[in-house]
Image (cartoon, rainbow, N blue to C red):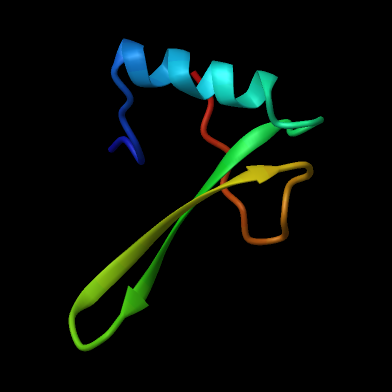
Length: 58
């Protein structure tokens, strides 16, 4: 299955953010547990691939 799906507008926004990201090569999206049953989502600029990163491309 798909890991993540972006609308055309969201994909365009990602391209825009990367153009402003001071050398960033990608956006890193992470999901971490929070509290008893919640999740917290984070988006950061990625300058290199981390050891646990999974690369998703169009």
